[in-house]
Length: 67
View 1 (cartoon, rainbow, N blue to C red):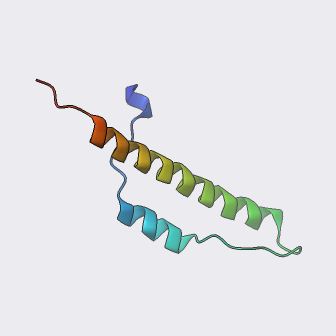
View 2 (cartoon, rainbow, N blue to C red):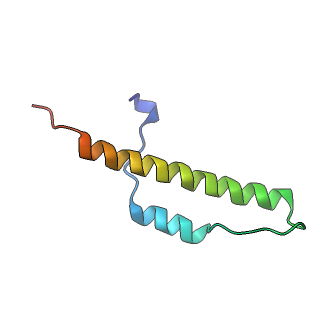
View 3 (cartoon, helix red, strand yellow):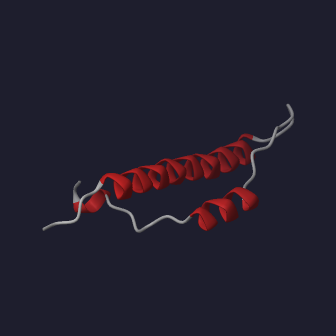
């Protein structure tokens, strides 16, 4: 993995806090595009971090220490 693609460890606590701060929600037909963009942008970041968290956990389980 290239250095620029690496993220610091992502904790479950961080993901839970972000999900609590930006929970999934439904919108009505009068919701502005700006509000929709903001909400779905935040949710997109959370999905990305969850994916990276899962990837980090899987890599930690399959990595072998250097001898």
